[in-house]
Length: 69
Length: 262
Image (cartoon, rainbow over all chains, first blue to last red; front, side, top):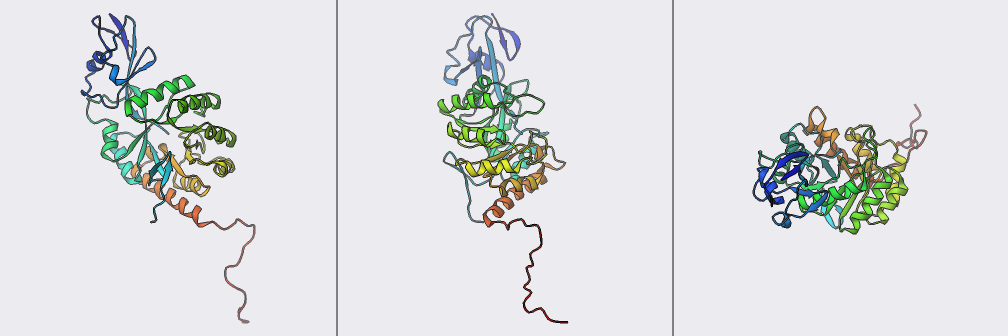
């Protein structure tokens, strides 16, 4: 299954979840300071492991950066 | 010094300087600036992990630096051009940082980075309805500031001049009008170039100053952080002290009575 993670094409097994994508980015287990959007909609942390991705899904995994003024 | 806290949405902050974390060359300079400016709150932005944002696994992240400095995170919507993007970004920031405070920025174009008033109001309405504590970056238009307050924003953050321009406060008259009519805190946001700009903002009656570029891009960021904090504190004291009116001619401070005939 092909999905797009942070703008890059990725191949994942069918049935992969948002949690699988987050894990694949080598984040710490709690992934503090991380947020995920699936096809433009926010996926709350408690639903990462139950949210199954579809072919062509666009996943954005975001974290903090210095910014402002 | 007598405690004189800044209160936004019921939260007390002892520092009237809020730091923006943009433009620091490395985490160490940010840490030094936080300490020198004695700030309690600092903005951060959201970007793709592995592209813009630190990977939290790859060493210390900006969140670690701020946590160790005892500084709270104020997420922003930097880089958003539409109400839709700003609302989504705010919702993601709430997830990432577990706070319902959002520094709302909706920019009209990337040359001036001036706020887009129409999109800003639309985003603010939606976010207030969604339970956010909204702190909008706005133009120095008193009517727009009042509209933002009326729709439930917990502060208004007018610009002194464009972001990163260092031009100070281009229209002190408008900032005065905003201060006079606001019943939520007014935070001068953008345009500060040096300590005197921050002092002027406070002398005009602003409740706080948000500043990043003037500090992060200074030759010595920590020294400028201390200077701007001193400017904020000095301006606040001067505002409370009540300045003398401006006049066109001199007014002698020494009495003429008793002047000897020599």
